Image (cartoon, rainbow, N blue to C red; front, side, top):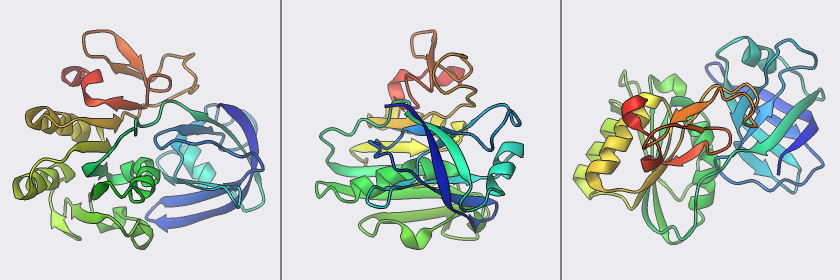
Length: 261
């Protein structure tokens, strides 16, 4: 249920190259689902004017601490990275529709491209506790500097790392690693993914060819996060558009017209 929350920053530290882990403490007990997001106000006032959408990363209900992992990519996130412990921050959420997780079992592929891991981390933690699932994480980045918190990944997962420059793990794109896994071990029972649109588009092709059901976090730039501005449209299969902030950001592969992406 969406709420406007004034939270206190309890941590905001760099965990990778221009990658930060933001922790905020809130007295409000939150009910969260992997794939949902919050709109974060970088600082009070109207500069910058727009909030920043961030998937929630981890939640520690006993401590009342909610975490977000983000990369500095512009002025808003640069301002956010300079915020200090004990300062207050406005967050709005949780927003959107998260992943559909009913009756999951079998081999599950989680496919992350770069900072897409921020959107899959809470899902990885949840699925690693499901005894009916064998979870494989495929995480691809441009170079080894794109990985973060590797030692804190859930232990009950099989982890496959890849980099475009070959600096860590296997050399290649995340989708190439997925194809390699499928050739070696067969198709998974389901795919969940978050990352660049080119990666998601190729995964949709792989999923269609192998008749693999799956869901993606289709992340768009958002101005409001509540469906008012129509700025986060995703092309819908069969025509028209879906709104990432209301209909998603978690979509089934078949909901999106990938030819128009």
